[in-house]
Image (cartoon, rainbow, N blue to C red; front, side, top):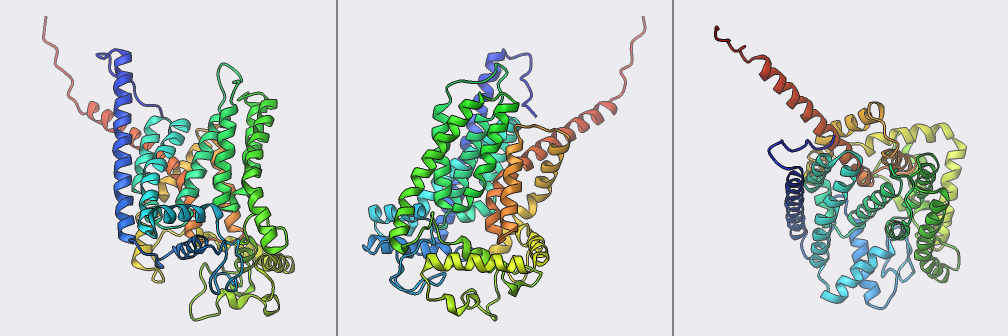
Length: 462
């Protein structure tokens, strides 16, 4: 999968320099295209915050940022999702992303378009660059370049890049984390590498950003650390003791980033809440008997609402207490009928991996779905399977672990297409590897066919 070497007419150093220039130029062009597309989306969404398909959360983040700027703290001004009464504190939303909007609104005034443009530019540069690094690290430079190009053009990522939600920053944090972990877990021919403390500090920062944007990432961290320990023990990526110290450093940074919000939550609710109050709500609604054996990703408007499903006797609880009570009810659903939970979880596959247009979705949703995942999923699936069975790499295992664990988390709780987007970012690397490999095979086939059709030269007599 490595790039082909330059022809003999160029000195080796000259070919390498030319290749670097070409790659830098391509990455620059890709980044510019990505920025232009995302800036265009930012202007399309405009300097106001309204509900669009899959973007209701931006209304909540906008409201909460204005409340914080108005001196009301992390509270809601009226009855708000999920069922938080007016004037009451909330921990349902990402503190970090809310503070991002607070900073933008505080500096530039209330202009959502500015926040969108900042996101568009940052994601236009960082997401293609990070996916390039992952592709290059695990498959070679050609795959990295194709992955960067696909990331620039992937409609879902363009759409969400300008939405005032956690999606794009969260995916950047995940790509950053996996790039750092891949580097730390990479075996060296010279043996274990000393002095990697700076990378562990960066890993702690990347984990902190990811978790403060979406606490669900906490569930993946044990698998991530387990893989690093396994690599250091079995593959000599670095001494086991050094890995343990590094994990302790990264964990310390992560804990220090969470503790201030845990203390804030205790003052607000007079009870322990590690970070956010949303896991209980999601698990309760995702496994409620209203689904039967077939998961309903979004309840229809002509039926009971999500708030209607909450038992009336629990509505007097504060947000933190209600979150815990609903989690307990959800576990009760599973304990009462574990077979239904298994079937319900399997039924979420269709919602999580949906790639076809539907009559229930609007034009924007259908176009986003078909022109991104709908086109590339065969290459993603092929690359994922082919390189597992035919080109195994233990270094690449971390990508498989992320895809498997993150998918399992949402199949066991609540599956929406936008919850799959972090997985899409990693699957783009496998799709790119498949595309590069297929093109290479086709090129070789065409070359062999061309040579076989050439006439045999007639030798002149003596």
